Image 1: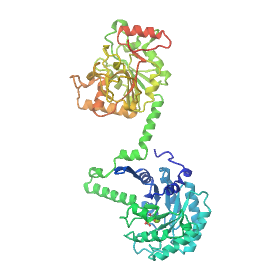
Image 2 (image 1 turned 180 degrees about the vertical axis):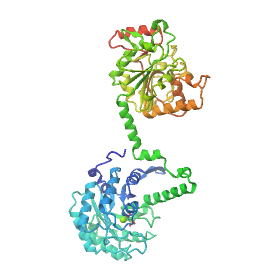
Image 3 (image 1 turned 90 degrees about the vertical axis):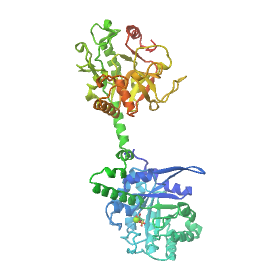
Image 4 (image 1 turned 60 degrees about the horizontal axis):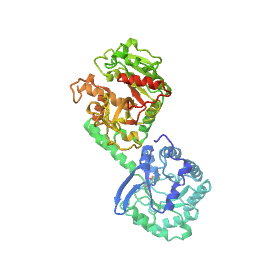
Length: 586
Ligand code: SPV
Ligand code: MG
């Protein structure tokens, strides 16, 4: 999640020093904006060697003057102001947690340098490297570019000024020796290193644009031979851009403590961008360029957009989720008891079934309730709900009723069958589920084999064979493999109780699958029923067949459905107890 702080300045600043104490070569990668910073911070490779598993990642981030300037479309000649550099630095720090080494160019004059050091230390940067050239410097890599070295004593003075204003021991000032870049010989470089060390600098970077590592290796050899008190705890830094065949192990062996890959993310991004731009031009469409591009979703994931989406959904789900109760159908079994009324109007211990459902929902802050009426719609009465009439209830199923509340299905919703009683504790459980589609299922079929019941909503779980003993189950691991007409009591692991939750994404998948079925005139797999006869659980099966994940929340008891006259009797009895205790094994 990149909107939040990954670390704080005081936590990050000392990390480079700690890494150096570890003794291994500190591997540093350039970043020039937030996104490349995230990559430098997070990319890792893992593998196996004969000595066991290995994991490689970058230890720190290099904020380069070359790539910061180039990102802004300008040459690396100290024309980009320090405050503009600081904006890039802050951008990267905001989305990373690893230590940062800043390329401070010449550092300007001593006052400029104090300003730079104070701002960087405050920001949580771990080190600044300044080069011993005269302001405004020219980039070091271009052959023939004018390179004017600073007087070493003046440069040493600047180092002293910087060191003096530091407020912590965590921040390093490293001197970068440009003698070899300016065509001077090794003795000059060595001499300057001694002067800067004597002035109290925290480390030395030797720069070279030679194709071979010989120059830096010779410098390292001579550096090691300096008096121990001069170099004790003073890291030696290199930038192997031109001499790029030398390995990290070889550099470490030579005595280097920090290796900086100084411009590789910018250079590779530039090449990829140019290639993509040309591919689109050549083809006059973007299809051919697509394989060269990261999927949009990968970028979304990297910059934290998917986290934001998830949080938005969680917010929506924690605030008055719409509840859809499909109650349109005529009950063929309880005709006698209902006397022409809809089933939801059945009186149970002095209150209608629907009123009891509303009370339980309201107790869980669910007040946006839509009841879909159909059969005997004019007789459906309840306080505090919206009624939508499904005039075609005879032709369709409860799925058609649910779909008639389409406006409520846009931002996450709950579906509750009209003929079940729930104990209160079930609703908070399903509301706290993070998964996109969750069905509440009872594990009764696992314990009550042989009790034939008339429900059709049996479920087979994907991972679990029928357990012999109870264990804790986690919703994200509970995946529905089959539901409804393809499942019978003998092979069922669970029974769907008629309560389901959809997140915004889950709801979109639900509607999208339905549209798909309509467009393809899909009938149910084992019957010739047309699409409109498809039930809610049939559509869930269609979603599973298309690869969408449907999770389940497992419960044991705590609910009661009204399917048979005996269920009414039992419910009446239970509701005269307080609180009613539902045992599903009727
Ligand atoms: C940078 O990355 O800006 C550097 C290293 O200073 S170099 O470009 O090699 O000079
Ligand atoms: Mg630079």
